[in-house]
Length: 530
Image (cartoon, rainbow, N blue to C red; front, side):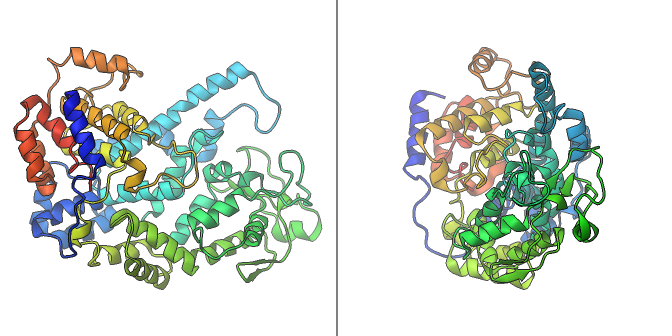
């Protein structure tokens, strides 16, 4: 794409093109389908708009809120099932790909390096599965919620052992619960080795307990703090530092053991061993070590919690999941994601009420949202700026070709500042305009749109080698192969995305050389919003 045209589009985006004020009112009928596809999914594939028109908005909403009612394409199922590490539990992954030593002396450095390189297949297959499902699955809302909840309960794939468990974390702790009860989702993440390792609770130990030795020396507040600040109550949720410390004490002993390690009964002396010792590892590797637990009565958020070992943590999760601040915090994040960066307080309170009334039924809260006047308000339509993840997925969906090679998509997300499973901080990526709208990011997006629109990313072909991604060498080679590349048909693309593309953008596209038209559509301000 010529430099001047890139600069023109970048300037329009940064100045807020397509962000003119619109008065409140119901969305025009000709935008309802694309609004649903953009908010409940990652944008349309060819034929999606026509299908919603044929079955109706209400039927489509009902389908997406019940994803198991939607059959998956056989080719997608076959490809995901071929990714064998996704079928492995966390303990199995540790046994096959984990380090030779666990908490002991350092082994051979070269052997450890080779083992880590071999373990990269876990992350590669996790990324492959996520991207294939996001692009190809007709259960689009389920994929949106997987992305939403993973980001909410974020785990960084490159922290120590978490590179082993990032795929199983999504498969075991996130995906089964995205439209279920929040308490189940909260408990699944709290007990998964990936979260226990990421936020250090696997080392959380009562200082004066029999197990307080070596790396298990004392209290670790990391997970307890983020559990309240990020996962449940919110930063202004009404808790104190004393509550953080108390919750950390409640969660002492929550961790995991090396699979296959002998588990001995009666490791805690006397009466406590009889009453509290838990001597089994759950299917995902969670293990409660009574030997390191703080067995004392505690007061948490004004509630007295009696000593009961593992049950104390379960009681604390019950309290947190049912707290009014949690209802408001989760409802705010949902409204911000699906409606607008600064959601109306009245909507948040309505959703919070539904959350509390249904004891955290996620599907019920979302159903309330999608039938709210705010969701359908014209002033919010097309005003959410897509994150890099949403942008890349929506662009590939719009061109309609089956995805064979996901590597260029993974590389593009990294270049755009949002590597999949690569957020280091526990608060996850932001989903608001200010986090992603800047000149450099827009240039990167337009480069991606140009390569994709011109057919140069080769997403429909097996890569020549593992390193053939969006590097300078690959781009140069792609430029030399332009004659063999098949550009995206801009007429089909415009039909696919429907009325989300403005008349101003359409006129610009029409006046441009045919080889650039698809890139201009995908790189337009209209397409970068949802």
